[in-house]
Length: 207
Image 1 (cartoon, rainbow, N blue to C red):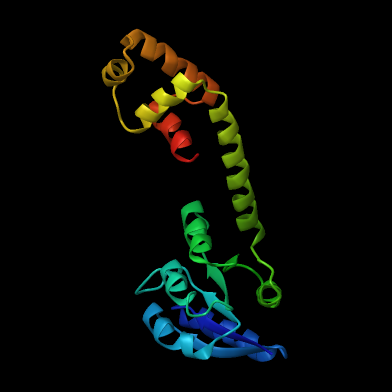
Image 2: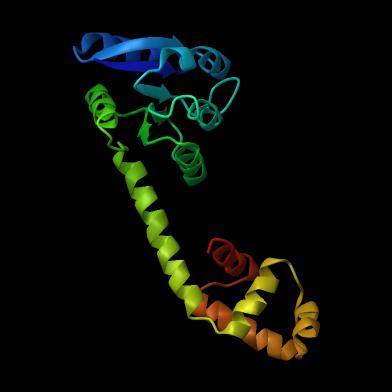
């Protein structure tokens, strides 16, 4: 039987998940927790197979709780169940150690299937989350290819731009005129397909 701990501050949703677990013959609710603090204090003693983790608790963020619990529970699979679909929230959770990410609007059948999959080593995700993760890595690869199209001088100038240097400062550090700097920057914008320093710096900083 697969033991599952629930960390969710919405009592209705927490209780709904528990009922789903109680109904399934292969699942068992190891415990219900309504705050990050109670999860930190109790879950390490339970050693659940899976933890269903809300991302935004009243007293903490779910990814922080995952980071704190994972070293104590290396064999436990953490699945985030949240309303948040923002990229930064998704990747904060995945970097913290979550192996799955579900949107709360998912059907109960999908949630059960995800718990079973996670216990077998899979990484269940809602379709919309999976697409965002895939798109992120596709964009990362594209941006890497764009940067590789820059010359050594252009990369050096882009590095200075990303650090907030002005045209005059760049010209002095490179021993070239400001007009030459502007030409280099125009070429950089064209190659990267951007329109300003901020967009160019963002691509450089994500390499």
